Length: 143
Image (tube, rainbow, N blue to C red; front, side, top):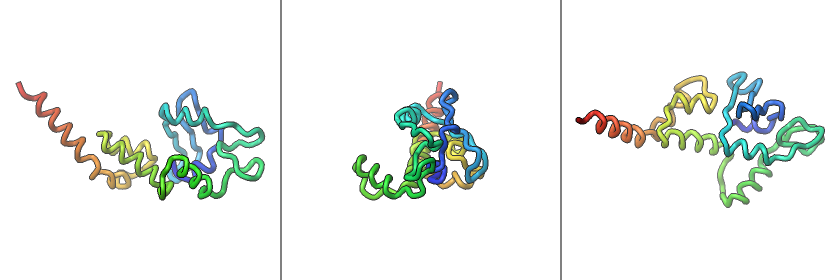
């Protein structure tokens, strides 16, 4: 997710039954974001603040956070990560998918990209899975 989507995420957008987030508005319009098992566990662990509709409560009652730097520094310290920009998580998510052989159209869909050219920057990471697929097909085609 994009930082603005995280900061303004409301509990009403979380659909645990379907394992997804339904964002009415994002950079690319309305979007449904799939939640995997680890992500669902994170949502289950977040305490709900009464009187606050936001998943991450801001300092003012009923508001969302407006600055992510201080909490992000705290999370990085807990994870023993020195200087990792928050946006790197989006990049890492896509990179892991490409390295794991997931096709770029699927990665783009998971990231909310509307144009293939946006996802194409990860193509260089998919070289090893392409080689693996080629080897698999080659050996299967042999008598």
